[in-house]
Image 1 (cartoon, rainbow, N blue to C red):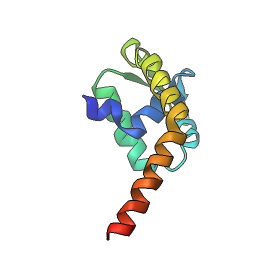
Image 2 (image 1 turned 180 degrees about the horizontal axis):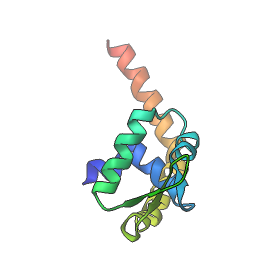
Image 3 (image 1 turned 60 degrees about the vertical axis):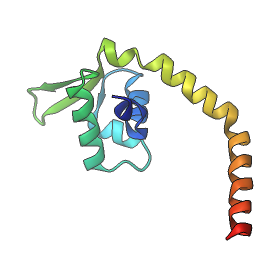
Length: 108
């Protein structure tokens, strides 16, 4: 379960869907770099886990929307907290990474 919740694509999909029901192409446009296949796999996994609901409408052309379930919405606050932590600590982490990389070059 932590693998799914901690997956970068899951975090991004939940972020997009936090705004409300969204169609596939709008989700894909909202997530830079996600492929059609990866988005499909991520949406199916989240649906299987009960975190989102897929609704198909009998229209021409067919219309499909995705929406977070109450379980999926319960992820929004923890993910917001994690994102805030990452943004706050990004400079410190980048400094640590640079120092590590410099030391690794010197040792190699």
